[in-house]
Amino acid sequence: MSDKAKIAVDAMGGDHAPQMVIEGLAAARVLYPGVRFVIFGDENVLRPMLASFPELDAASDLVHTDEVVTSDCKPSQALRRSRQSSMGLALQAVKDGEADVAVSAGNTGALMALAKFILRTMPGIERPALVAPVPTLRGESVMLDLGANVECDTRNLVEFAVMGAAYARTVLGLSRPTVALLNVGVEELKGKETLREAADILKQASHIPMEFVGFTEGDAIGAGAVDVVVADGFTGNIALKTAEGTARFMGELLRRAFGSSLLAKIGYLFARRGLRQLREHLDPNNHNGGVFLGLNGLVVKSHGGASAEGFKTAVITAIDMVEADLIRLISADLPDVPGHEEEAGAA
Image (tube, rainbow, N blue to C red; front, side):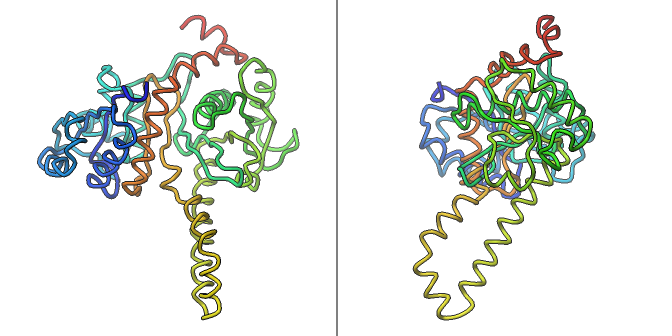
């Protein structure tokens, strides 16, 4: 199925677009030669770039627009002015059935606003959430929400857990992933009331293919203590950015340490293989590709500062989502959540 996926691409979004977008698409196509792309952006800029990658050019339809969603564009502005932008048209292609999934490295807030407006949320889902893989000592876990919803109620957190579990079954290949709510402690009486209420509901959702284990703390994320970490967007975004900053901090400390003396430089020669593995494991480009869950269509968000390698990873994530039929998985799980049975039946 992955070889038949058709991907709508916002070629103008991202710090290094459109060059890194085109190079990333070309690299992804080497791995998935049957995939086709609908590329939205400035034809005058993109056509010469595509000419450098004849096989990608042959597998792509280029749709011209000179409208771009800028990095400082507010979500409200995007809704009023950006329907014909490269981002808006990519989302519309998914809505119209002309593509299976949209990929963009553009403004996150604008992308979420446009995606909600154009694609709408799935029946039974109140708010979509942004989920992404995070590196851990065990390999990878997944985390959501990463900033799409600053404030969340009990229902939102429950829906995030269900959607996150479906996503984890796809990207981690687990039949029954472990799920926990991010809290200030693991004891049942800790944290805000919304967290405790969400935990009570999730304990009852035993028919969903996931294992709810209660609460987890921030220091357990990197250990990979659970497969799915659930939080409101404010908390999740801070946790993710803190982890990324800590990884860069440690990398810089190691660089300085190994360059501090001749003996340290000699030590680096013996340690460089392990350090290279560490760098690759922590490199955000190798874990790139957040997914907006809960929409009537698949949308993948690449890091704005991603390299071509990182954008390739986001495209591969998009292909995986299409292959797994993620929306169907979420739709199948929702009726088993207490409080969602009637809504699912009505839908």
